[in-house]
Image 1 (spheres, rainbow, N blue to C red):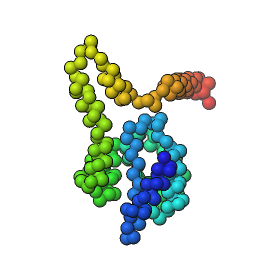
Image 2 (cartoon, rainbow, N blue to C red; image 1 turned 45 degrees about the horizontal axis):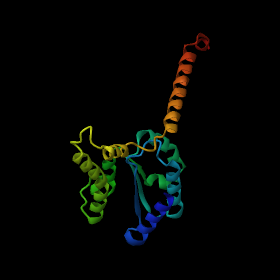
Image 3 (tube, one colour; image 1 turned 120 degrees about the horizontal axis):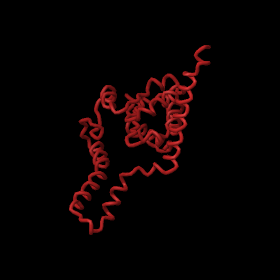
Image 4 (cartoon, helix red, strand yellow; image 1 turned 180 degrees about the vertical axis):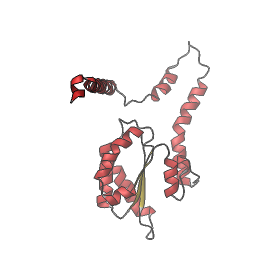
Length: 199
């Protein structure tokens, strides 16, 4: 991902910026990522790379559709950045449109804006196409009876399941939840202990 970020920034610098406005705006869209899939180390590396190697090129770094749980974790990561880079960082959850509209002249159509340039329309079609294909397959198999082959329908439904949630991750999450519950009980027991209250 770091290589992709460098490639995109280099492309932007070489082909998209003008001498009058040499800054690049970077947008990181976290849609569809669970709190366990956010690559914090990669984001830290990309931010460090941008601030160290392109300090005057970065105009603004938007991170949108950031899950609320991860925003809390990200606050510690943000403190490591240089103050000039920190000022350029804008993090938005589901209310990202307001942040983007305040800072960008036009908002791409695939993010809810009204930009109709060919690049935005092509990206918008690529984003929508896989879901429309799946919907069309589901609609054509709508009248499938129990005796007919439903393997294609099962594959479509299996695609909707997040493959990153393996048994290990579910088990790890359950164990952490159980440990947190035990800590809560221990704290409550400690607070209700008469010896603790008399001190």
